[in-house]
Amino acid sequence: MTKQRFLLTWIFALLLVVPFVAAACGGDDDDTTPEATGTAASTPTTAASPSPEPTKIGGSMILATTTSTQDSGLLDVLVPIFEKQTGVEVKVIAVGTGAALEMSAKGDADVALTHALTSEKKYVDSGDLVEGQLVMHNDFIVVGPKDDPAKVKGATDLNAAMAAIAPVGPFISRGDNSGTHTKELALWKAAGIDVATVKNREETGQGMGATLNVADQKKGYTLTDRATYLALKKNLALEVVFEGAAPLLNIYHVYVVNPEKHSGVKAAQARAFVAFMVAPETQAVIEEFGKAEFGESLFVPDAGKKVEDLGK
Amino acid sequence: MEALWEGLKEAVRLIAEGDVELRDIALRTIFVSGIATLLAMMAGVPLGYGLARGRFRGRTMLLGAVNTGMGMPPVVMGLIVWLMLVRSGPFGDLDLIYTKRAMVIAQFLIATPLVVGFTAAAVQSLPRDLPDLLAVLGAGRLRSLLLLVREAQLGLLAAIMAGFGAVVSEVGASMTVGGNLQGNTRVLTTAIVTETSRGNNDRAIALGIILLAMAFLVNLLLTMVQQRRVR
Image (cartoon, rainbow over all chains, first blue to last red; front, top):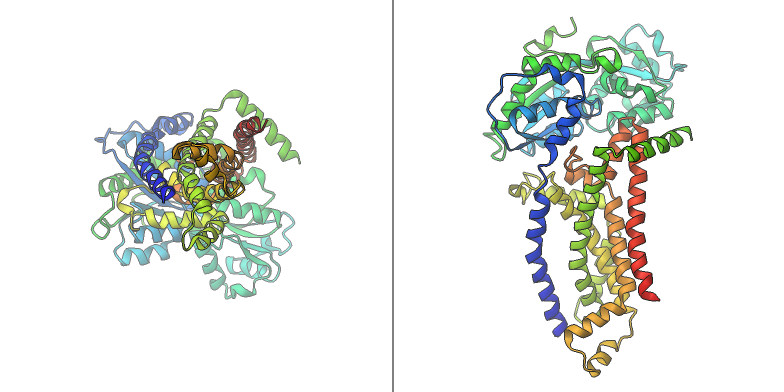
């Protein structure tokens, strides 16, 4: 059949063309850096970081992290500094902590920056995450509608606050296995409340920003990290209804994905990033981050401290 | 309503000032979706032609599969491509995940069934004995094919528009396989998601307007070509 022969010629021609096109669009995968650096240069924080120039490492790495570090804008400031210092292109994949840890366990990422200590421990124990470092913390807060129908504001402690919300609702949950979601489930458990009995509890399955928007529109309560809440506050009618209890500490660690267990891991780049996150210059940037815009720091730098000493 | 109005104003301002990031995102979107559509055309038109004219066993099965593929949710295709390209996946060593190339691959796979389906429909709407007629009139194999393509071009251009429209507007696959990396794989749709979740509604609306305008311009161009040939 002539037509079939024609078809074969086409397919063959296509196979020949594909590599060329692929090469063409591969060429500018690296056009990132100048643009990203430009963004960072406009923020006042960058001025603080002419650090001892390490040797350029180059290459690229995948950073699996939480939506809160991305939505708050912190990584938009830190990553360009790191890229400039080391020449390493960072691919920031912002997912929930659960997904970030899962990616690490498969060796699909090089570094994990996450905030769910109990979940992280499992991956540390299994040997997927190594060389962990405490980076920073902020805190979780319970937010809700201004009129506070569940009277959470009067609650004396965290368990009482959760117990006040349960029969009234609505409570909007992340429902995405993120660090915030894990924390929320732990809070219900600690208060002795079966999640299924919480009135009008709904799960968005989305990031913190999107979930805050849903809670805002539904006049519901939700648990959020303070950084994302402050960053989005201008669009929200939600208010802080409970804060300041010890279990609400939101602690961020950074880990190298074990290169001995996962052969694809870019160990040099990953180690450089971990070292960067706890370097004094970077910690100073974290300290300043958000002060200009929100009047308070969004994160407290913690490098070198112990988890047990936080919040004291 | 006020938010929409504010967004419109911000959009006009951003576009008028020639916001660099916005411009790069728009260009990147055309680049990625354009290449994906081009490749889908190259693969899809001959396949669609073969399916429409060919007489072989399993043809109906194949057409059914193509028609299913036309309704394939992009996010599912994105998931499949992600599983293939991720480091622990079978093609992980190629280091393609979270690159524009990965996005082109996913979008190519989304657009191709559309192009194949539309092409097959267009070719089948031609008179069945047209190729024989052309052969009798002394047209060579290549020439008669070109004449056939010319006859079917209304449908073929519709195929291209459908393919481009699908990939330029989808968000799921681009997000999953591209990773929405700032300045690298962030395209208009994923940027809209990011700006919305960051509460920057004005920027989100501005991006949406650019996306709409872009899709309109491309389709207008194709429609003009299509309609000129009709006259």
